[in-house]
Image (cartoon, rainbow, N blue to C red; front, side):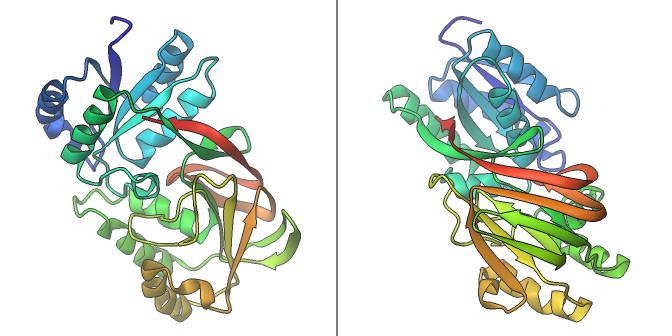
Length: 299
């Protein structure tokens, strides 16, 4: 790989397996756009993160990832945990593509390659956005604990190729299984909360689960995170909230609370499910979350 060649890390399992069939077209479009690349396929979970960390530590200053939110999560951790620095380009071939919506990258992966090629040819400088950290890992789009993390776990076990609808099915399965309302002690920039919650989501971007506009006010370049937490709600209340979550009109509901923060510490009375960028992380009782202003560069 020459100094000008850009490593392209592609996750064949992204988009619930559809990405593997798109490899020939992705390569063809990269060549058409004149992007000098070296295609590197991931072979297992966390493979992209490890390989990107090694590439950046070895001097790579530009990285392209073809995948979904999980692949972007790995790329974010690979870049930010490395001893070097690199700007990130994205080809969205995942399912939810939540980060893509916040980052202003075209959802059409063909158009995204075209725009990426145009920026590279014209020497457009990378733009800077924020990231976040929860405990010892980084996130690009957001982190959450409680019911939404449970839905993420349930959705990942649905293998049907039905796009964002897997998250609605996950909500249904979560309701059948029961709405969790753990007791928490939560301190955040400018305030605190003690009591039960249904969920707490700390957002860098405005979308989660592909179709839920959970933080419509979020801006991933303002140096802040948006904390959304919800009081204990019943199954019927969840059903009424879901359409509002999809439209982003839930913020006015009395059970929903919004704070703009730079740091949040959540301590739960018992282990609760958690996620980062939609990726399930081990259940825990303590989560320390902070904003990292300007931590990521996008090609």
